[in-house]
Image (tube, rainbow, N blue to C red; front, side, top):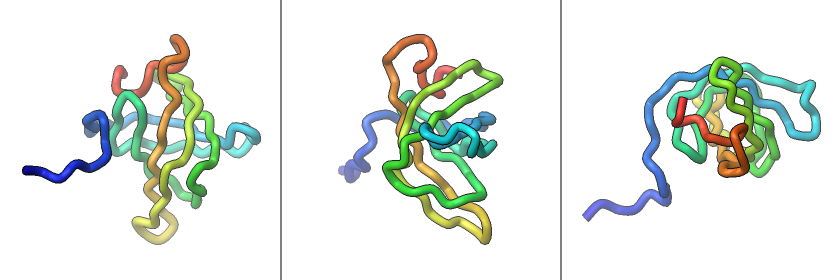
Length: 102
């Protein structure tokens, strides 16, 4: 029997262009791409280190998706590259549809 991973929803390998910024400081924006997505989150590759529990704004300009979220984890994957887990606030309206819909 497989061990549960803690995920409620399956991730889909999908590349989307995103912009993420601190919710309190929208001027500090980083453009990135996703490795995978689900209705409630995504794993993205970034160039700066983020801290878990930081509140962020996630924008997918090509898909018209805009959502609040938070950093779940940040791990170094190479020199100057980090993988970040994003948990999205989904269900509040059209702007918070999640990224798996795109």
